[in-house]
Length: 350
Image 1 (cartoon, one colour):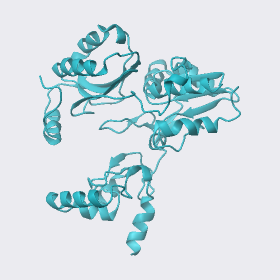
Image 2 (cartoon, one colour):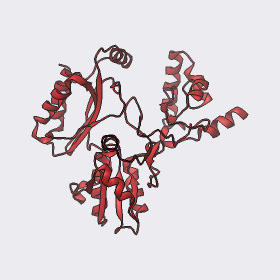
Image 3 (cartoon, rainbow, N blue to C red):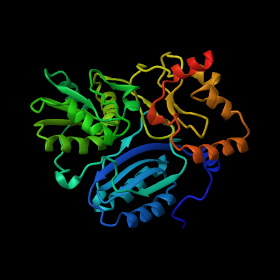
Image 4 (cartoon, rainbow, N blue to C red):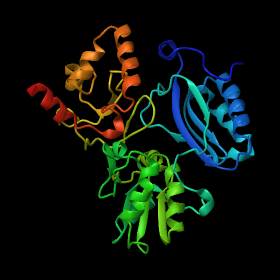
């Protein structure tokens, strides 16, 4: 069996859409010592390919981080196979919210230095000394306590469309950037109750240990993250204190946690929480776009990109090739966060 995918993107997507069975999307992680990540990677690829698993999985010496889609009827078999490895026994699964299972179109398992890039020297502190895990009910109650500080450990584009009220949301593009920003924001609050949350809990595991290492005494984290919070709220009839949508790193780009829209279209300013990537492949900017602007700009971020997207594919490839050769730091790269409304305004006045 080949240990990597050989089919093209469009073929894989067509194949996914033609499936006659249902899928579910789930995620899990486990911090555990893995002596030979490459060997585990190959083993998982073979066994999960047979189960028709799709997804993005990172394996490192420190553990595994997985977001995947699998046939619903094979969920029990998948769990049985995973739990047969003592390193992953009883690893909790987070089931996606309102999902049709079409979240991934191929199986991609990679060996990485870490399962979440954090830029930390883990040998300098005990990464297993994590904060106290709180259930949704406990998290809700803790947020009401005087002096409690709630911190969102996700990136700016995640918290932009959904967050807990009054949470500190670092203006960061990556988890690596967020850690020092959060540490600085908590200056003088080492005795305060700190509540951390993220998508599924994995970033909070490392962040809580990081804060405890820096002397914070009452560090807590939402167990299972926002995904688990949603299901606990639904199953236990709790008050849903999360506002908006939960950003996810798959084809859906978001799942509704509450019915509120707290963000706006980056082009026109109307209420919207739909993330897209610019249809101009040379750009591929991640931004929020409403249906009206998607139609107006052909799914692109600016009029300039719209013009490029309408060119024949051969011409587009030529432009990408020339652009890459001349300047690999395009102003439309997502992490530079261009002001699209200002760019469009200036373009229309030109």
